[in-house]
Image (tube, rainbow, N blue to C red; front, side, top):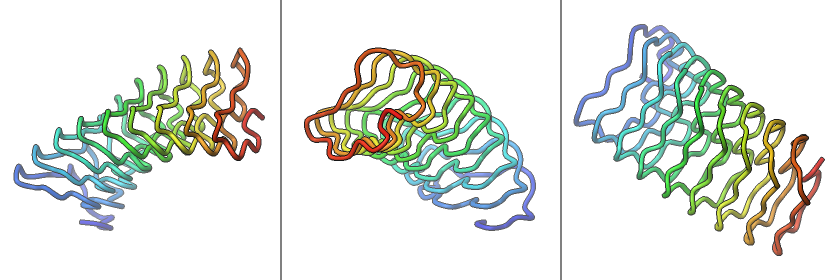
Length: 209
C-alpha cells in the first residue's frame, strides 16, 4: 500500500505476516491506530509519514527492525514502545511530536540515530541500552525530557545526542569509546557539574555550546 494517499480507515495486519517494511508508507489519510501481527520481524518504515494516524504505537515481541517505523507520525499519542528483540531504532519516532511518556530502548538496540529527534512532548529520563553504538541526535529537541543524560559503554557517536535538551539536569556523561561529541550538549542550560571528554574523543565542536 506504499504511497496510497487516498486510502482511508485503519490499517490491518494478518497473523502470518512477517515483513511489514514500508507497508503503509505515505498513506497519509489512514486514521485509527497502527497494528503489528504477532510474527512480524521487520517494521522498517511500516507507518512512515502516516501523519493522520492516532492512538499509540505498537511493536511485537519478534520485531528486529524498527527503523523509520513511525517517522513523521505527528498525531500518534501515548508512549513509545520497543520490543525485546529490536536492534535498529534508526529514525523510529522522529517528529512524533505528540508522543507522551518516557522513551524506551531494548537491550539489543545498536542504533539510536535520531530515534526520538523532535519528540518534544516526551517526558521522563533518556535511556540507552548496553549495546547501542550510535546515539547521533537521538534526543535532539526533546526539550521536555528531565533527569540525567546517559551513554552506554559501547557508544561511539554522540553527535548532537542531547541537542537543545534544555530541561535535562545533572552531570554530562561520555563513555570511554565515544569519538564524536559535536553539538552533544548544545543549549543544555540546566546542567551542573564539570564537562567531560572521554579518552578517545577527537571532535568536540560546540559540545557544550
